[in-house]
Image 1 (cartoon, rainbow, N blue to C red):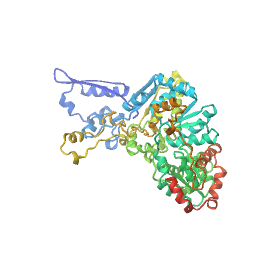
Image 2: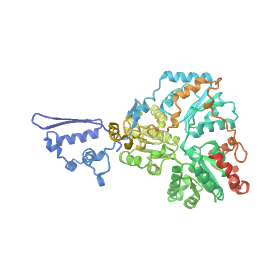
Image 3: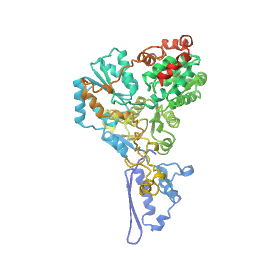
Image 4: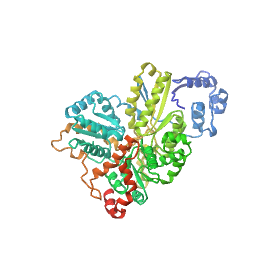
Length: 602
C-alpha cells in the first residue's frame, strides 16, 4: 500500500511456439516482482501459462494472501492481477491524485488533470484582475472551496495585490475589516451567502458601513447546512432546547445571520467553527456545571463530537487534562447525557465520505496520512481519528488540515531522506490550490532536501458523484434508443470513477462553484456601479427585526461576538453566562414567540 507503480508488459510467441515475456516498471520493488514472474513463465508453452495458479507462485515468497484473500497490497500483487479477474471481481482503481515536487506537479487521473491545469494561470488574466483591484480599491475574500480556476488566478494575484485573502469562513470577515482599514472601498466575497452576510454585518459593527460588499451571483448561493438550520425541524429542535433548564445553543457558523438571530432569541446562542467546537462545548460544561448543550445543524459533526467524548471517557485523567484542564473522566461521563445534537442536517459534499469511500481507503491507502473535516460521516471520522492516534491523521477544520500537511512536509525535510508523502484529502477538493501553494512554499525553503521528497494529494471519490443514465422502458419499449441506452451506466465525460457529475463531481460543492472567475471579473468591471447593474449582487443589510422587535443584524452578530470572546479569552463571556443562567426569568415564554419565530425562521 502507498505504492502507485506502473508496469509495462510485452508478450509474444517465438518460432517454436513458446511464450516470450518482457516487463519493466517505474518501481524497483515491482520490477523485482516482474523479474521473478518472468523467470517462471518466459519460454513456457501457452497452455502452461493459462494453467498458472496464484498458489503456484507461493515459493517466490511474494504472495501475502490475507484472510479471505480480500486485502489488496503490493505483497499480493499476483492475487490482484489473476485471481480477482478469475473470480469475476472488479479491479479496484486508485483514486485520482496529484503529486507535488520541487520540480513541478504530476496529476494522476483526468479529474486531477482538470484541477492541475488551473494551478498555473494565464498571466493576462492575473494582470487584468490586479489592475482593476488596484484602480478601484477592491478587496477579495474567498473560501478554500472555490473553483480551481479562480483560486489559481487569486493565488497568483496575491503576490501583486495584498488585499486578497483565501481561508476558511472564520477569518473572512476579519480580513475584510483589515482591507477596509487599509482603504478598500469595495469587498468581493467568493463564498456562499451566509459568508457575505457575515462580512456585511461585521463591517457594519466595525464602523465601515460605506464599504460595499458584493456576492458573485444575482441568484441565491445556498448551503445545505444553512438550509437545514432554517427548517421547521430545526425550529422544533430549538423549541425543545428552550424548554430545558440552563441551556446553551452552539450553532455552526455555516448558517445565515437571520437564523443566528432568531435562534439567539429562542435559546442563548454562541457560534462555533469546526476547529473550536470541541473546546467551546467543553468550556461550557466546565464553566456552568448543570448546563445542557444543544449543537446544530450538522448531524455528522454532532455525532462525531459525541463519539469523541465517549473516547475521552475511556482516557486517563492526565490525558483528558491535556485536552481541557478542567475535565476528567467523571466530568466527561456526566456531560454526555446533557449533550444534544440536531439529527437532520448534512453538508452535501462531506456526505460523500461514507462507507464506500472508507472501504477503498482501507484497501489502498492504509499507509497514507488521513485528513478529515469534522463534517464527514462517522465511518470516515473513526478512520481518521484512529490514524490521528498513530500520528498519521488529523480531524478538524480546513485550516487544521492545511497546517497538518505543512507540518508533515516540514518534518520530512528535516529528516533529509528520500520520502513519498501521501495524504488522503477528506474534505472539499477545492482545497488543492491552497495545499499546492503551501507545500511549494515549504519545499522551497530547503531545495537540496526537497529534491528527495514528493507529496501526493489523493482525492477520494464516491459513486454518488457519478451521473447515471436511465431510460423509461415503458415509454420506449422496443426502440433502438432504449436498447442502446440500457447499456449505458455512466454518462460519458471524465473517466468513470473520477467524479464525473453535473452535481459537482469529486467532493466538490456546486454552490461554491457559482463563484466563477467570470463573475468576479464582471463585478470588478462594473464598479463603481453608477448604472445600478449590480444591485442583485450586493450583500444587503438586514432591515428586518426579530419577533422581539430587535434588529436581525444586531442580534445575529451577538453569537459571533460571543465566539470571538471565547477565542480571545478561552472562556464564555459573562454576558452569555448570565443569559444562560437567567434565561427562564428574563425570556418571554416560547408560546408567546412561536407564531412569529416560525414564520420568520422558515
